[in-house]
Length: 492
Ligand SMILES: [Zn+2]
Ligand SMILES: [Zn+2]
Ligand SMILES: [Zn+2]
Image (cartoon, rainbow, N blue to C red; front, side, top):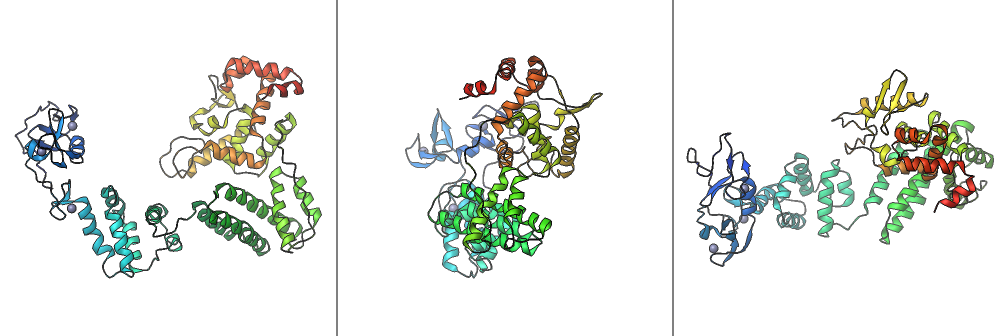
């Protein structure tokens, strides 16, 4: 750097007793000055802003870098009396020197040239790519990106032709986050066609989902169904430029339900997609959550492809009922307590909804310290009064607290439902999607639960334990006293 660093023992400005100094431009206290200009001692923040300021000089009128400040006007180095020459010795523009007299852009070109232009497999493509990197608004961001050895490795292998500059080539690189940046740069400059992110993730999801099926009699039809029916369909949607997120989501559910069914069919009846009987399907549908109905898509496809022409599943009436009866509520509590319909966190979240009428947003953000033990057993703080947690749910809740602790590797933020990917808690939408996918009508479930609770405990106490306002608790108590038909007319 050729920036004037403040010489020792000549501190002008306003030294402070604590050893720091006060910036003469912004007036803030800082550790040490970044530079000393005729104007005074300048802090790092002010310096960086100054050398990124360009325009017509308030003194001489020339258009150039305006790091100086005189009478509230930004001025050039000459008018400000700054003796540093900010001209890049390589390209000649006035800019902050990134290193040894050259600007960040020239430094970047110096770095990338040996890395990417030393006998590359495709010289034209690599030259274009280097030009693109050097032309970005903030070359510093590329410097930061390429500091990682995995990025340097990626660029080397791209130049040598070991990794083809295609979507498929980049797919083979492990480092997702860093290739994602390169991919978006290549797409933006039309060196790669835009690719649908959801489609790409879906392809990967199918491969992983199929890979873990051990039984060939299950794997083969599941894979055919996933690729020939669903993937083909999503590819068509993507090619038409239509959004694929929704269709991918629906396809995943269909495939997941199909694998569950085929696995059960094989394990229970030792039959396959081809030998499956109507009776098997009827048994499966009758004994589980409504999501099992999604296997219908598989059998429609199986009929069309002549894999199985014996099974017919009627369309389910699509209108989801807004009502949610106490029986349904109790059935779901039982299912989530004992069944294996979902992973533990989602079962616990579902029971919190069905026992305490808590909104999903609040459930998602629960912290482990809200669960405590006293002489009467487990309690959970949802309102001002901790609410008792009855067995056997208490055991399940303890398990969730314990299992999340053993699974955490990084910093523990204390979430009851941590997301291991982001370090935050699970998104409420994730919880809602999973519970809805089971067939739970969330809105109905919460209203019905609250109604049941206020008939069991006095509304003021319920309000305190559940974190509801008194008026809401009272309103539900009144509604609970009314016949159901009347209640539904109150809903919009
Ligand atoms: Zn400052
Ligand atoms: Zn000037
Ligand atoms: Zn330069």
